[in-house]
Length: 132
Image 1 (tube, rainbow, N blue to C red):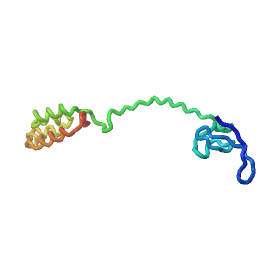
Image 2 (spheres, one colour):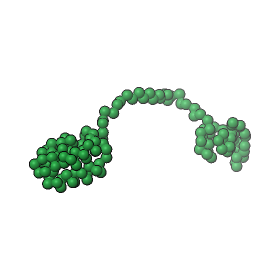
Image 3 (spheres, rainbow, N blue to C red):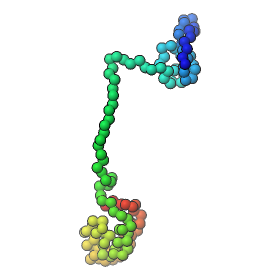
């Protein structure tokens, strides 16, 4: 609660003061913010020339993005099983919609087995689902 006092300053002039309702320090009567603690003591008197601004945000936008990469989600475990059992035929590449590499794997036996091993290790460390 604010109470008004009259005090004399160092020059001998009298000034009206009040107490801050937060920290209890004496502050000038017309102060809106306490000079000691910095908190607002009373409501700021509105300027009649400034309009009241009401922000009515009715945002109904819906994010249509399915993922950040723009590809289709693929299950890591399905691709891994296809790589183990049918990797030499490129089945995991066809699953990822990479038909060109799938055909290459068919004709080269999974890049002579080396491509299948590399793909197996790569698929192990991918997140589930991963995006292609």
